[in-house]
Length: 360
Image: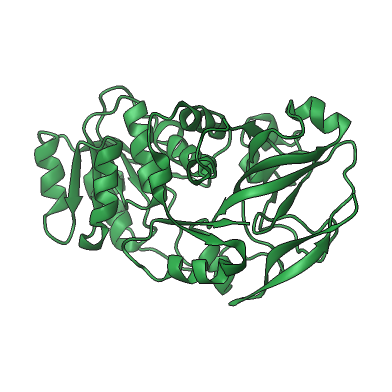
């Protein structure tokens, strides 16, 4: 296909530039997406800084939380994805081989041949457009896509993977049951998604825990359905949860901060035989001390939680239903060309900033 497009490239850690690329030819198995909006994932500031456990090969186009329109699609891709030119879709972050032991058991986020949009491939390698921080994304064979209703705001639609994370961490990893208690530590985008998942699962009570600076986020958690919100700077969270649960403590704890205090608090909040989901990721190489006697004496189950897989399909259904105003998680939108400004705001710790998105 003739013509060119532009993307924002992390040339090296802490430096972004806008580059021009040729639009690729679209083969039988390919899809070209016109990006409508892309979110700045919570993992991407570390990739921007060069401190991630999963640093990409620079120069790279970041971005794996995108929504857009099918601009061109090949014959085999049409059959596989069941979409057509003009359809509005989200693209899952992971590309998988489909035949390794992890793919064959449904764990394609651990595929031995895994590629991840915005992470795996340098933009120096054709077809170049392997990240969402651009006007176009080249959707490669092995991707998974889902249709989004045209009336869903892009500020909500691009969050399909985020909502999928919440579903995975509460339902799949936490194995929450009806009327079980759930505590979410850290009310960022992922924590808020976990609140929604807990509500959808029929959990009760649902408690969201944050800091004084998180009041806006905690208010949104309550709007989404959390029964209680706790400010850790002002109350004894352990005693408050003990009171809320009539002494039983939480059946499921989702720890989203990735910090030592947050992880140890999660162990304190879990009841005997409780399940703790640990999606929060520290800096590369950082060791987090945990008081293991809490794990042993309460026979807790700790589960690492990398990211969503099949849960994205359920997340899309939830977003399409419009039962929750998930677009409120996206508090700031920047033009694509101001991606670095958006990244720096996201990294600033501004309490009014929950999620930043870019609009080409």
